[in-house]
Length: 237
Image (tube, rainbow, N blue to C red; front, side):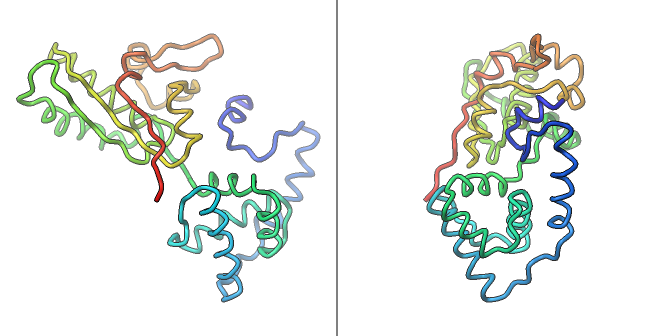
């Protein structure tokens, strides 16, 4: 489990057990501290943060809700033991790598295989058959998955499309274009490698049919499913 958590790249600290209590105790005052009030000074500091993010990543967060941004900024401040926003702005200026860390912290990717089963059931029964209706074998079927995160939803759709082709006993040229602004998420999606806990979301039949379990306990998406999906990092303007 610890190795799986570290592999996500989302952990803030990797510590020995004896080092954990002190870090947790230091973190508590920040977690339960007061949320910053939106004042003109605070707005000015947030604009500086937005500017750093835009220059570093090319993405404009200035239209995000202040409450959402504030919570993520406060979380980074807590991790770094920084007490005020002004000090954090200076830290961003001095440590460009922190801008990238904050950027990824703002991208809260929540995804899983076949997430929201009712929606996927409706997709499988009402939408996907229509994509193949009137199509000749070897025709192209194209799908776009925006905000694909680490690929679970794109691969889920690929699996449903493959099952439909199997039911029809026909082959079609399926192309799924999956996009996200998070380059790290795209890299993970392209690998097609997932931890053992995906078994919670997938039936044993689908796991056996569409994945290969390696000796380290990770599932690899089958080659024919991965071939359907093309991952792109969404551009910015």
